[in-house]
Amino acid sequence: MIKGLTLISVSFACFLSASFFQERAGAQTAQTSSSEQKSGPDIGSPEAEILRRAEIRHSEDAHKEMVERADETSQIGGELLTTFKKSRTLGRDDLKKLERMEKLARKIRGGAGGSDDEVPLDNPPAQLEAAITRLAELSETLKKSVQKTSRLVISASVINNSNELIEIIRLIRSLQKP
Image (cartoon, rainbow, N blue to C red; front, top):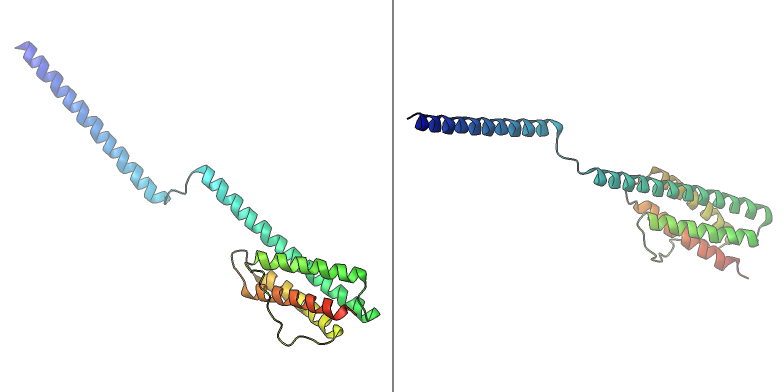
């Protein structure tokens, strides 16, 4: 009888310890889920966080480069206008500046999400002086629109201004040739 009683006691003790551990595990699960609700959703692994931050940094750097390109384009446009007003012609250095300006405008257009489509000019200037004046104005307009645009936005005005600037540069080259 003592053996039977001992067996029952041991079985009861095992039952109590099993139910104790099961109850304890349930409390920990409830505690974990309530702390997850307080902290919000899981933000991901540290590797994913590092990659996301690198993407953001790259995007910010690309936008900064686009703003710098627009600044340089505006500066070149002003220089070309000043040089033309003095000499009434474009020299070899000015043609190189035009080439640089076209490359910058293409990079700006590409960075803004535009493509290499040729867009005809509305009301193209017939004289070189008017074309260079319009070039300087467009380069300044492009600079302002790039500065206003966020890195998160694809701007149609930036693309249109870039396209028009590229077409004006082509027009100036054709007007410059004797």
